Length: 491
Image (cartoon, rainbow, N blue to C red; front, side, top):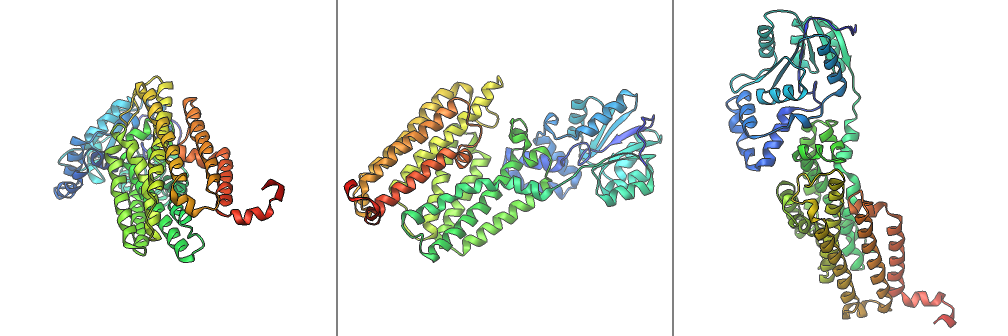
């Protein structure tokens, strides 16, 4: 039974999973770990003294801005209507009282806010006792979402059910009347896949480059090892993406597009993200264990640097771009390690410069958005809008240096030994100059709205250039075959 009319009984509102689409304890733990990962070793010690003490210690050190939390807008609107009708609203949560007060102050609709202190964890029977004491035994309605709320509903005069499992909703309806029910549809699998960012796996195609360069693509064993390496890096990368999103909740919620990511938006439980992070990492290293030992070492180094980037290095000006370029280059090294070949010096040098240029494109495109919004700084990064011209100069120079490395490579003795018509390869230089220049023109105009790697994957002109480049390489490598199909007067 749904009763939609406002009434005079106080409405007590839970927070985790009810008022907000997330869990404050989980949020605060990751806010704490982002501040200092070493606090991970303190969490079990604090927990030994009780959950209330754990929450108190975390709340003392970690800030979870109430203004950035993913609220249930339909419930907040309902609460505003009830408040306007003169109803007393009470916020009661097992989360620490500091966070409870912050939410109450932010929304400005609650008459009272109750939360856990350092001695008492305000959940279940303790929450019920505090509410009854506050209301002097008067009747109340309770808004909740979990099985732990059923005893409170049993003592309440009415229930507001918010996004609860069907079994919990039925249990609430059995013990009290239902004042209002808010339902929400979930597709955690879809949200998890989105959070894993499978489109970013395209970056790991770089693992196959050493296979092609070494002309081993027709060797089944080498191809199989490269595929395994691709799978290992993809699982590892997704694990890092999940952890990065968990650590960046506050900054992502301030970003115009990242705020829609599953964890930031509250579409995916943090607890599920933690489990998926460890499962993906385990899968990655199990696969890597079947490959040559050096590949496993490269994967470990990649993971360490990626974690360092997520925790610290991405907030270091220009160093973040250098690390990103290095991580792309490590994919090439990993690809070579997987098939047990030595990567070319020319390939690694080209990679460093081209990916540094693309990393700076990403930073510049983010600053374009910041500038358009009238802000001066990029949230979570060390860049300001005043740095934009410097970024352009450094990025364009790095892109052109990549082309210069390519030119030196084409003129090297190794190329003359490997290709039948090496002079054909000079066509690649103007093509590359055009591509990198176009990328920077688009970025300067504000048309680079994606990660440049993602943009490249979607860009038709890049595909056209890639096909032409592949044709040039084929002709240069297989001239003796190609010339048979060319009329004599063209030769």
